[in-house]
Each structure stands twice: as C-alpha cells, then as structure tokens.
Image (cartoon, rainbow, N blue to C red; front, top):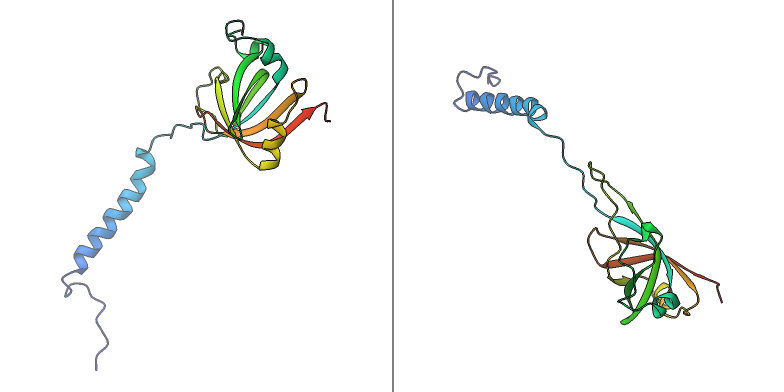
Length: 159
C-alpha cells in the first residue's frame, strides 16, 4: 500500500482552503491598522458623601442652596434607607471614577434622591442615626444612577 500523497494538486478543496487561510491572515494583519481607539467611559464610581440629618431638618426646600457641594454649601438629598425616607444635608460629595472618560469635565452634582442598598447592619446604622450625628458614607454606584450600594458607613460621634 502507498502512503497518502502530500501534493495538493489532486485534491479539489485544497486550493480553496489555501485561499481561506491567506484571507484570514490578511484580515488579522489589517485589523489593527483599521481599528480605532475605543472611548473610555465611566463604568462605576465610588461616592463619598457626608452630612447630617439635623441640618437637613432645619433647611426647607425653598431655603436649601442649589449650589454643588464642591462650593462648600450643603445640599439637601433625600435618602431612602430600608424603605424610610430621610433628608440629609450633604456638605461633602466626592466621586472617584473607576474608569474615567477622556474628556475631563466637572464632577457630577449630587442627585436630589438616592436609594441606599447594602448589608443590613450598615443600613440600620444609617437609618438609626441621630439628627446631630455626622453621617459619612462610602458607596458604589453606576454613573447617573440614583442607587448607592453602601460599602462603609461611619457616624460621629459614635454613641
């Protein structure tokens, strides 16, 4: 018995296979040259906010300043924690983007309403905060979303 021939002239699909391999190699080499730089968008953000419930209780909606917290003025934000709405005067609002856009702009302002989610013990601490306590929250959110997932919460003074 003869071993199989290594010549491709007698095989009908060999020429077609060779053309397909050449086409695939050509596309693989041309793809990086035709590709464009992908735009980077913010996928998630860490948000740090701090304020007190007492200052929010004193301020009415008409008296609350409409400036951003970056100006140092408090802004009243309604937090929904464990189904209960509480008004928090946010004096510190910082956003740390995990992936930033190429064109840097102003940091987003604090939304007027936020829904707080997370571990029950942290949510209970926030929901049970006394009006005179300063509340500091570190949370994660998707840009433009009104939902915060709490990672850490601190109350000062802590008693």
